[in-house]
Image 1: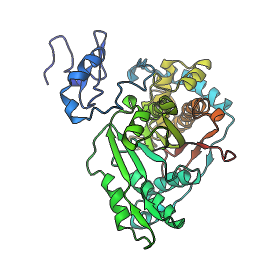
Image 2: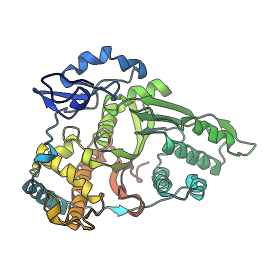
Image 3: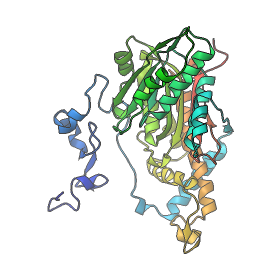
Image 4: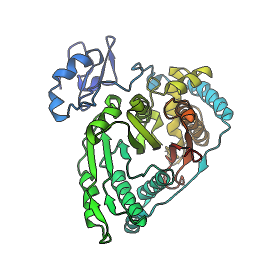
Length: 403
């Protein structure tokens, strides 16, 4: 693409650049191209890519955004002093968190056949543990809509469906199948597995006394920030206040925060059964999209939007692995922070914990899905770090003492 005479970049590569006080952002209709941020509302109605994306009733531009500002410094501007300043604040905040994270690795028969076929079992082990927690805490009930956010090809939903059918068979249900699935992703990946959900049921051997009922699978190609969940569920599955279980395996960065706000904005339009989100890629988090209660908590402890951007970058230190420099392990002299590899790894874990705890505080304080509403929310290690370093799950479910 050509560029204007007074611009350094063409329109496509202006994504991360502020030009004359203006900024290019991904188009809400089709993120494959960019538009000027101050022209989004004018662009959307006439976007040529609109035909590629269904303009459904549940599309509401920026519905789940609370603050579109992004006070994020350029990475080249972060000095060693900046790293140390914010790392020290995060360490103090980490020390104030008295609630430990327990390791709760579960399994589920729905993944048994898949595990036996795979040589690399890491993804299946993660799926089995997530589904095990969903089953344990009532998120796999037959009447609930299972909504997978950031679903990709829909692989997790496929094995959730298989697990639900096996549960029905173990209970000797007269009707097998019939569950409801909502797959949400802003991309349109190839080789989707949506059709496999019904096909697996057809191929599964069931008792002659059982009747198979085709599951309802609906996919919405939409950015989570534009999703009105209550409208989507009622329009696609009929009725109001449908029971819904939210799940995702590795919902990157601010997509997790958008999902939490999406759920809060759904209000009484959905009846939440629970949430199981495997957290991921905190380096992509944005202070403006971070939950309000978590943001207040950080600000009360001196962490600003600028500090949050630095902390978000440092979260990757926990998972980036040992680097090599001229054949030997990288030392503090080779990293702009001045920290050694071991120090960075420890700091990365602490900062990740702080960011996740802010989310947890927001969920617990929520009027609809918080402690006062009868829900239990906690962070767990749902798999061993040897399986995945991104092994933290945000788990929300009705308290066991509740009827």
